[in-house]
Length: 406
Image (tube, rainbow, N blue to C red; front, side):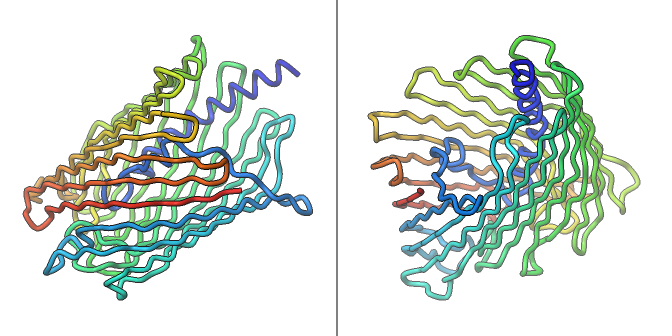
């Protein structure tokens, strides 16, 4: 049994490393460089459950009031408003721990009702749903993830809110060859759909395969291949191939480091030559003291542009978050990020005269009143500097959030 537990531990860590490239890709595939909130960087404890007839129900709810001094980036006049939000949520799961690991299927849904104090025309409901299934059996681990989100967005340069839908999905399989080696592969899709034809919608279809070796203490090494096709609405079809290598280092619960670096070859249906570029992602966590956590992310990736059907952008960025537990119930977090966007045509000629520098910073105070209730007060500042004046933007967002979970 002890040997099986050791093997399961190695397989789980190898599988987590195998997902790292996809996690970085899914974040960077957003229509605009996004900010990762501290709630994602330092998630709260796992929600409690209500069990009935072998099915687990995990309810939750949150409410917030947020003031923004710049709702629409390119409105004729700068608009501010007080926004009220209510987000009930429910996760339904079946399965649980077994000798081979956790076998479960989880279905999650959370609507968000947004009400504007002075601009009722912006009132809307957002939806977020996901399905996740994990099936370990012997040396094999199979997973399925499918999500869909639908919300009203006002990206850089927008003059109004428009409906945006994304639907990332992935089917993965991992196989443990031995206590020190493993293989992992997956097929994925990532859809980005706008109701407004002004913005570019696309579908990314691809797959990847990784081989892992844990031959050094606390270190796992990986080598991977990936490839896919991006179908762009009213744009130039793209294909990409990637050769990547990765390393994962963990020292107790205080230090962890995951690095993926590689080369990408990208071709375009309307271009005769291919384009080559460097890609990487880095994630590091550090706990210098029992009450202090630090997380650092850095990345570089090319992705289709939201604004140009015949264009892409290469985003290079980093984010950092520092969380300090003050007392048993109080904590403060300071986080921020920077992204540089270099735009280019899909044909490989830099004829789009635009580059952006996007900054965000967020201080936050959190009170965990009870194990079930959490309150947050935050201020978030966004700034986008662009070589094209039309896309320059800044905004202050101040908010109070209350969240409950079983």
